[in-house]
Image: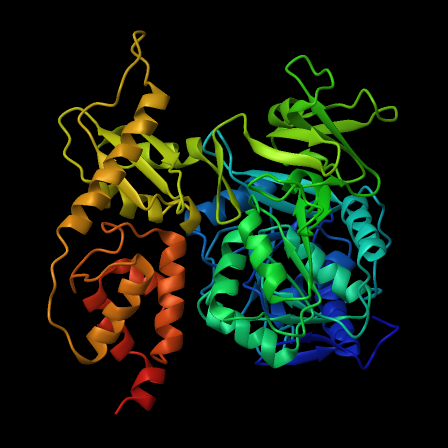
Length: 589
């Protein structure tokens, strides 16, 4: 911060902060936390969406020597409370004027204004030095929660040395400079945001951030990239696909570096990016437990192998990757283990799970550990590691790691439900579906269960469709046949979609409704769609909903919210939502 005092550090459509202003705000945050007696042994929660104030809060906590625990406002309140309790959080920095207070007992809330990033707390007496604290490389820098197979989220404790290694390596491989503008749109609960923030600020670049109205609104993202001349951006492949679709024939000229990670990167998408832009595209891989990225591959049409997906490549600096069989012996194909500087300390408050996933590293230095990723890979001489799949029941939904067991636990907690099985469909539009078995003498329907699950799990964890069957398939032992139940859910989903498409009948429409229907027809590749057709019944899924809402907002100059659309996802309902937005009313004739 001291090297570039007048350089713009953080920039949005609402406000900006120079490096000197950011230094002042973050110092105030650190001083206030110390004055209130915050313990460095407990993380400071940051309740924020991507914003100038959110960045200031995270940087302020870290420079003061605290680990930060990011909390997204879109998470259900019960999940937030569970995470804070597990981590022993005593202080929460709440960012944004419109965010409702958490209202949790024994948690002190401090506020950072969304528009100016001004900290509302007073340092008080005895604040002492408000500058940066002495930090040991093994001190935690973050506690980031991911989905848990037991139904309970697990918080990975990431040390400073892990994040520092990732930033130093990145600066050697693709240097950032004060002339760069890095798009910071990744939610803080996903660890790539840590690279976006600290790599940019550590090298004098400018962060371009939200607030974003309806994330991910592809039209808005493209507008921000164009308006501010963004040079570096990261997207999970599913969001990258939407971004590419909405840019037309070429990506913004300002982009020089593109990163993709969190999901398998389809080769056809990478080829499309290469055709539309001169930006360098990196495919990167790494669980939260190994800090952002463990491997990388620079895509090129001729040097990235021949498979359907782009390789995840070779290990980054100070990182060891092992492909091991069930006996932990080296193999060409097997489970991927990661050792080296990026390995986290473990899971906060979960000693047994830490011991299960973080094993002694027989090829590392004394006391070194390696993380068992659960990912199956193959090592190919010309391109390095190629991702094959999972050995367990973890799936990836738009870049979010989702344990199917956690989804099933939430469904089983719904009154009237005995057991449930979730699965990810295959094909061009994979999505999450589930089938539930009602409790004895109970009557429950799929939408009822889905509404319940939406109240306790993040949006990405909620199945697009939930079916109810009197009895789930059983094995001879009486246990649930998980594979058969997953096939049943997929078959029911296919039948529902086929029935909905077969029932489509032409219905006269004009004006705004006709415009909405035309957009739906384009995305569903259908000649006609009824005005009261349910989006999910006719084959829609969560990511497609994002694309349709983005298209409606852009093409009809509307400002509808994805969550509102989910309440009643029909073309007629969408027409009413468009009519209700101030942007549409101001331009309608």
